[in-house]
Amino acid sequence: MTPDHGQEDWARAAFARSREAYPSSRAPVDRILTVARARRKRRRVAAAVASAACVVGIGLSVTFLTPPPASVAPARRPSPPASSPAATPTPRTVGVRVGGGKTDGKRWSVALEFHPTLPKGYAPPPHGGPGTSLLCQRMYIGGVRVDHQGGPWSDCQPVTGTNDPGPAGEMGLWGLHDKGADGTRLMVANPEPEVAYGVVTLTNGTQIKATTVTVPGTSYRAWAAPVPDGQTIAVVDQYDNHHHRLTHDTNWH
Image (cartoon, rainbow, N blue to C red; front, side, top):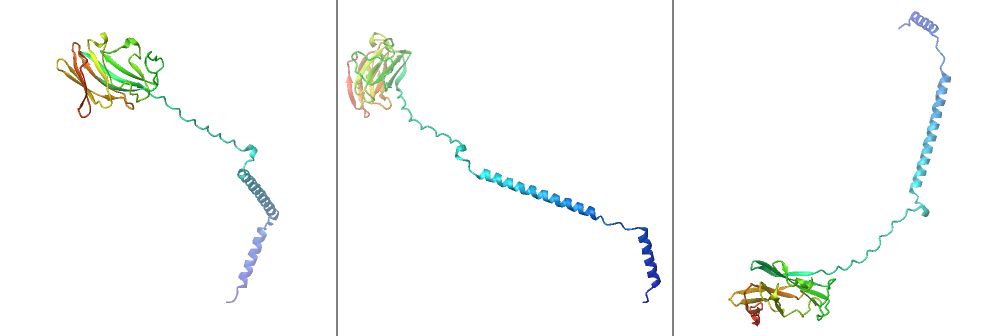
């Protein structure tokens, strides 16, 4: 194909006219260099700040990980004082109900009290044994304690420990007046160890059975039976667990 030289000439002339009509501006070299210098400066400042932060962080880590000197070590909590041995508890009074009920329209009751130590205010009888403990026989008829006129310890006797054989074998008839000769009365026995129960037989043929009761932790025991007003005792018998009669007493007419 033959080139069209006329067309080529026309294109060159058109390009020359366009260049003359829109002269090109110079490249902004100075502005480009200024911007580049500012960016380099910012990078240097940021690098310096990051480096300082790393140094500070390492310093803090070293500070926290290093143990404090002995002069500023935290004070130790004082050890609690050794506990003192527990105080020995004071022995308490032990009691047991021996018997109770209603006779002649009056409530009656008998109980035994064992005091391991002599109570404050207790004065031993003139002819009584020294004793280290106290055994009390509390008897009530119609809400009134028998022999209350003698004071709070009038129905008590000194004993030694929990197994004093002294009280065993005693027996008595108790009332609120005339030394138990009349009115509603109480027959109370402090039997030997083998006695399981007692039977009071009245002159009218009535029999009153009473079971032996023991104060827990001691050898002190008793049984009690009521005697109605106007009645007379014919005999008092005591038996063992096999119902064998051990004693036969006819001296309570």
